Amino acid sequence: MEQKVHLPKGHSKRVGDLARRIAEELKLSPKHVDAVHYAALLHDIGKIQMEHEIFQKHGALTLEEEKLYKQHSELGAKMVSAIMGIEKAAQYVRFHHEQWDGNGYPDGKKGEEIPLGARIIAAANEYDKLMHSSGIINQKKAFQNLKNTKLDPKLVEIVLKIADFKKAGKDHHPGLIQAQNQQHFHDIKYKGSKLLKDFAVVQAVFYQNGSFYHINGEKVQIPCEQQIKSLITNHPIQNGYAHEFIEDVPSRKMYNVHWICLEKKILCLLFDVSHLREYERKQELRIRTIYRDCLYAVTQGKLTLIEREELKSFNQGEKIAEFPVSEKNDVAACRTFIDQLLKDRHISEKKRYNVLLSISEAVTNVLKHAVEGKMKVYLNHDWLKVIVEDKGNGIKLSELPKSILLEGYSSKRSFGHGFSIMLKMMDKISIYTSTEGTTIILEVDLKDRLIERRKNIPL
Image 1 (cartoon, one colour):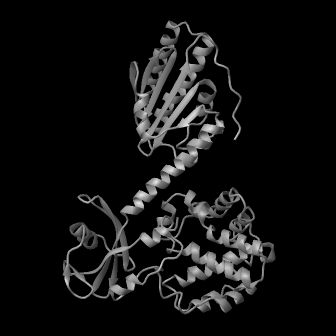
Image 2 (cartoon, rainbow, N blue to C red):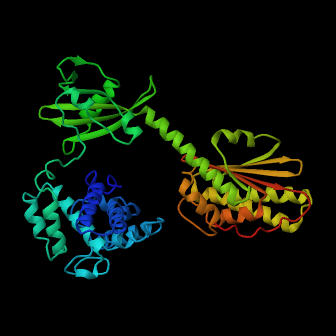
Image 3 (cartoon, rainbow, N blue to C red):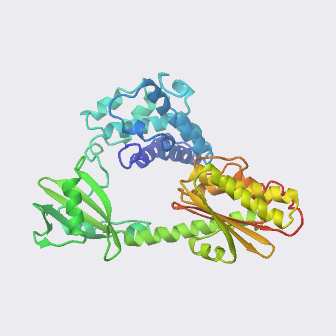
């Protein structure tokens, strides 16, 4: 989020840490301190729902842009209120841009009308912004000047007492390694995180005049040398620091490369992150398994979230038709074929209607959410299987439960009423989704009996 909205790296954590210290200095209850801390960590979270362009603009915002920007505190409050256990933190997020003199937003509250937690976050937030602003020489005086205008005067005094106005402004990029020798890198200690312990520096070298040198001055070769040279020479460094991910195709290793300006040299750090990619893959599989089990349970075994390798088993049997889906006329063609198939098998009118409605929803959503797709039809004795594939962006895992179980839920990547209809009408539904597209497999028993409408499945 900080990268997206152009905030200094670590801003949320620093504001959270300082807000907690202020709350403890006020001797608030542990529960109140925690609520303030959580709210401070998440105070800018609403910005992720806003368009990127508003944070990338150089110069003053227009009145309309400013109005949109000011909505981030309310958006953030709604997001935080949905997190079980920290609902109280939501009001602190909502009001953290209110000002002591009443000139803030969203409601223009002033003085002690503003919740104490929000006033604490405002003080911590202003401190961090000042200490990471290159255009301010005397940060302490600038902070003092906010007393009785933007900030609660009592909280200003507390920050002046507990915060460091000397060290904080010197490092505008917390976490950058400014070492002069290799030993420094081995001395870095990571506590409590297996990932960070494994996140080892492969090499730390200097780049100068087109070559790489060991810190002792010896010329060396490094992995992906030409790619890294190209990065350093073709990508200008902003504020003395830049980084990028690159892949070494022969070894199939992934490196996170950081390059930092140190006087006339460039310090280059290579981190082997290949194991992190594998860790992420395993984590994603665990998460998908949880979603799969939950969706299967709440739909009473009717819907299954499947993996890519399982798709092959569904594409077996007697395929009797395949249709491309890229324009409106294709939906009608798919529907006409299924309708005739069901009539030829003397399926009752009500059942035929239910099947056609479900398949129409699935096929129509290809046009809504993807560039193109196709429908394949299989028949196995009394079972009709229809596979609808698209080449869209897929459905986010976090959206799946809402898309499937909340009737009428709609977003750019959801299916609106589609899943609700299919759950009621079909006997089995299987779904595979990824960033490469979505596949929905609809199965229905064509024995001559009516499909009973299922009641809405509660969350």
